Length: 119
Figure 1: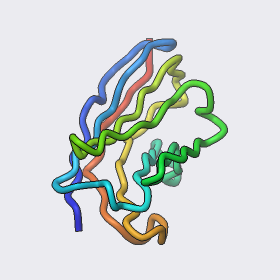
Figure 2: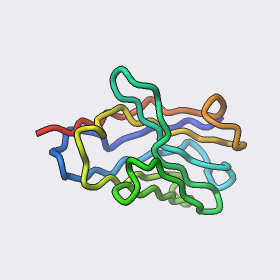
Figure 3: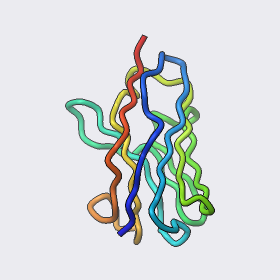
Figure 4: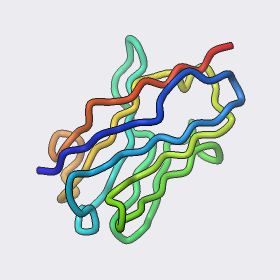
């Protein structure tokens, strides 16, 4: 398994931006996909964005055009650039390593980083 550590969360005003980082303990180049999920209070965890080892990206409809996922294999790090943030983006954001394309019930998870969007 790979250990994941998220950072970059915090308090931001509506319309603001944040960049989340997910640092892996080993090379991510061979990992099938790296994902960002989020869980808001009282809600289920949901997929926000994913990027495959080949660079294909997938986004939740609610964040399309506002969030960008990227990966730097040389730094073993995945990023989530979040712009035009809304109060409904408030959640704990988790990084997930989907090592074999088996989905969220497998692979490795980080501890999460909290994002609060509020004026």
